[in-house]
Image (tube, rainbow, N blue to C red):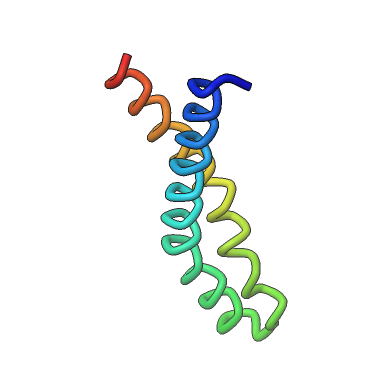
Length: 71
């Protein structure tokens, strides 16, 4: 693997990590609300799980924006 490919892989992982953190932080309250409304502790994991899926999309768009900016 060349140095350029390693840098692109590292950048992609970086932006996906940022996106997943943002998505989990935004969607975690949904799990708390579902837990309170349904009185089921198993619903606590629904929010962060959805947040990861949304966060991957956010991270991918951040990475593409970074690639377009750098050329």
